[in-house]
Image 1: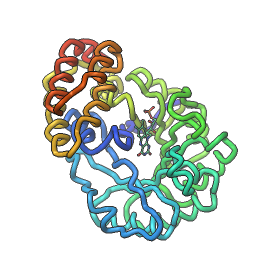
Image 2: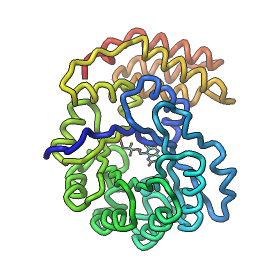
Image 3: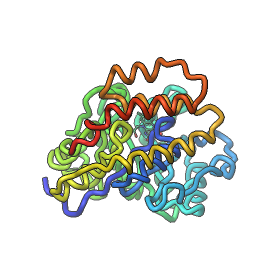
Image 4: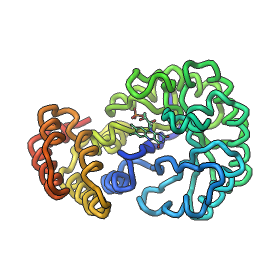
Length: 319
Ligand SMILES: Cc1cc2nc3c(=O)[nH]c(=O)nc-3n(C[C@H](O)[C@H](O)[C@H](O)COP(=O)(O)O)c2cc1C
């Protein structure tokens, strides 16, 4: 299938792994058009101003940062969306994909895919109240695709500007191969843009998804943590150009990650989490890095830089 316009590339929201320090690091390397906060949970009886206090649309400038909401109450979510727009969000998204039981137990996240009436009401009210585009990020379904067609249609009918489809069911978790045929189906059924997500692990895979599904845009999650150059590689592949990554750009961006992560009270966890992705293709280095007993976070940083030093070649290999 042929795309009409150049696809936009989105860095996926990823709670924990993809926190603000990571998004800043990725933005320093660039290549993507937008990123998004991890989900902001809107509980019952929320005090919205304090829940939304941290959101800064400029934090990843010049790349815009949208905001993602998770919850179940249409009125609160609509109000939160309007407040986020006031704070400068260019887009507000509803999370309808989170598999976590603590979330889904309360009817939010992917559980919404089993309650289409509630899902419609939430999105409709968000669209009515929020002056900037509202989008939905969904999975195929909870256990199966029973509500898939209903759900994709209602996203469009509620007035959303884009559907992002993580092409797995909740039961698939994160490891079942993504079912791109559902992205193709969404693209056939809808007039609004469809952003494809799931298993884009290389520039070739990105082109393959575009080709096989005809989706308008692409979203990448975990591969961006394994290979922060993935977006630049995809841009080059789209332009049919060769790509030569710049290691100094990578290290500048990693420095930025550390500058910000060191402001946290306990940075070792997030450093290990990022390291486990960056070293994903190097099991021995990864194991050594993860099992080392660090007494300080500076030590963890040094160990990561040393581990990366001996592995950078494969990371820089084109696409
Ligand atoms: C650690 C982690 C945290 C995630 N947190 C969120 C989140 O906050 N909001 C969301 O919509 N999706 C979240 N996701 C799902 C991703 O956005 C994405 O849909 C999924 O990882 C599939 O894309 P990928 O194969 O490119 O990684 C998360 C995924 C991971 C691995």
